[in-house]
Image (cartoon, rainbow, N blue to C red):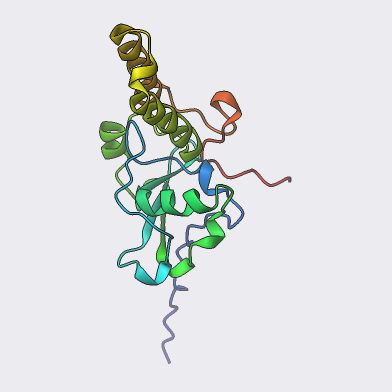
Length: 174
């Protein structure tokens, strides 16, 4: 009898993102100020598509699709973790499994939600309080300064700019 040896099926390692990773540390997948088109509380039962998260080459995580839903969660719970998103509503891509070049083109400096929310709020307050500036020139300079921070601050990994987290999962102690 001729026995053919079959190879074991290869198991593809499922990418994981730690449940205890704070959502504010995920990187916002757009350039500039926080854009929020949905309002109200986050309800995973109403989600038609999963929130898509991609691992960047540096080890940080960026939200590829679902930025508005993450912002909804953070509005009501600024310290929420990935655990609030049901696993069947979270699509995770490892390094190399998604188009990182597209991100570099659309968002060359992805920053944490915490960072983007902070400076977007300052930008919104400045625009809302335009009359409180002593001159149009000072108002425009403040808008330009805040816009520059949001669009031009370089991506930093780990605990970055102003002590604000930048989407990297904490390394476990070996």
